[in-house]
Each structure stands twice: as C-alpha cells, then as structure tokens.
Image (cartoon, helix red, strand yellow):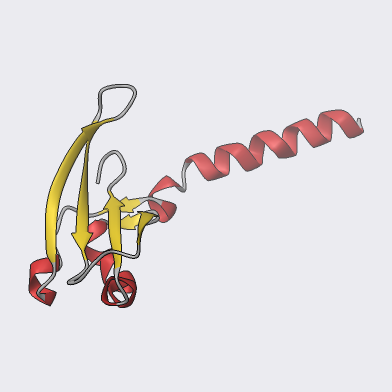
Length: 105
C-alpha cells in the first residue's frame, strides 16, 4: 500500500509540473536594449548546438584591455537583452562578457 501511494504521489507531482511549464519558462523575442545603448562595443555571435539548433550570443568588450572573460547563461526569462545589464559593472571593470540565449529565445 505504501509503495503504491508513493508511486501515485510521484506521478501526480510530475503531471502537475508538466502543466506548469508556462509558469517557469517564458522566453521573449523583444529586444530591450543592446550594448550599444550603453556605449559598449559588442559582436553578435551565432553558433550551432550539438543538435544543430542555431543559438545567438553577444560578445561584449570592455573599453580597455580585458582582464578576463565571463560566460553567462542568463536564466529562464526574457532573453539576453534583458539580462546583460546586470553584468555591465563587470564590463566597466575590464571583463569581456559572453552571454547567450537558449533554444526558443
């Protein structure tokens, strides 16, 4: 009885989250701001994932010599144009930023 009940609860839990995808995953095609708005130099980068899905990224450069590079996976909401602004202070400190969009962004 306990094993059957546990299996039922796991199934119910899994089905519940299957219907909640839109609550956790909400990509956005709107371009909020580009690095150019903040007078930052950048390149659009396009690359293919292992399954040949075309992905988009920005490689943003500091004004002087780079101290290093940060690789940013931005999270599950909006797109890179809404998330790179959180990292501008590190670009101003001399770090390059490579931020990319996941599939469907």
